[in-house]
Image 1: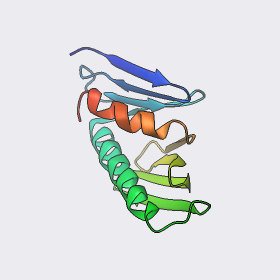
Image 2: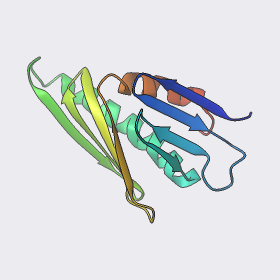
Image 3: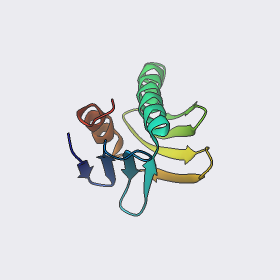
Image 4: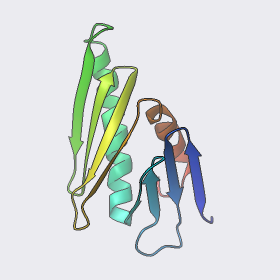
Length: 121
């Protein structure tokens, strides 16, 4: 499988299995970050865990209540904030390079849906 780039309104994901150092790409309209193999794995794991946690919290909230949830690994931190069915996510890279970015509420469902269609999942 060669390079893959998927994008939508306010998000992009890329996968290049030929890259020895940075096979994954995450980004939005105004930022992008290449992820190492370990960072890519952790990103996928944390994003799935984060969306599952928000879904679990949803049952406890009234429609007008906002949700805030965080997931942290050794390499990345992800935080969700917004309404249970419409929230944004912020990512902070905690490893040697240090970087951060965020996706608006409209992007998260598409990102989660696209991830399994990329390599390395």
